[in-house]
Length: 347
Ligand code: DNO
Image (cartoon, rainbow, N blue to C red; front, side, top):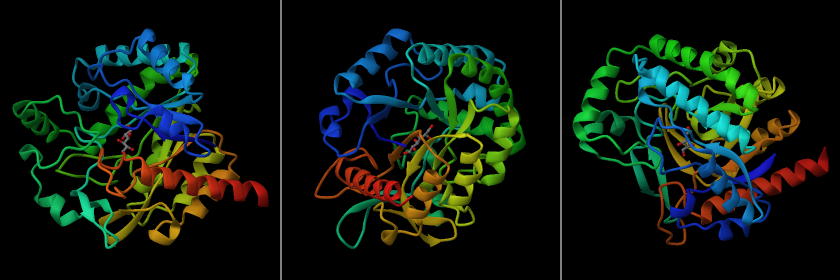
């Protein structure tokens, strides 16, 4: 694996210099943030981004993410134009030599929590998802604003979008995803860009919206849509792992052996109810997921793609983007690095 770190571009308070100082980190995952959702990414912008990263002796190991326009997810008539734009972005990424593209197919909202600053007993602040609280949340009231959410809608637009989704069933969403993949995977193959879908986070429906990428069965359904290694997965331990019925080492072995995992996110959570969890520090001793077993599964499948620590808590008084401070993620990177080094020695 290539140990990587997420960076939010030039606006990020955490500089590439600082990231470079984390032992073992060799890759950066990032995106272009100043292009409107649905518009193509130009080759010059991509090259500029890549150049900035390489100047720090780091490698741009994955794009996270290219957002998929809602017209594609809803299946509006205008989707073809956005699919063409997406293809242009894939081609340009390929021309720049960037080979992993993460995306997701979650309607309207990306990852969701009920509180982004929940105080743990040690005084650190973590993200938490409590089903009862989320049920009472009104997305139209702007209770929350998370880094993955598209903030470009005004209230009216958001309201009509949510209304339109009332008519979109899970099966419709699958059909729209199928339509999208059938159109883009050939381009991805030609450009040598591996598509990696991120699972829904959490892996169940929220705010009455359909969510479909949530377990082994749905991952299988996804890879079957187009039988190509370029139609692959980003496995996020914290997202899939939020459902305790998902067995992560088993999922990793299954799809890793088939060369369908192109990107890995490592995060620990602690179950506090059937559909409720707290985000915790990375070590297995702090949460419900066994990180050694998860990393061992990647190791055994010969995983060579980017792997990054996912969300961290806010510790030592740090303030920053929810989940994306420096300190706790750096501790996570060091922990992952230590396990990997050990696996290398004992195998
Ligand atoms: C959350 C992230 C997600 C992820 C997208 C991928 O922290 O893992 O926002 O980047 O869902 O498209």
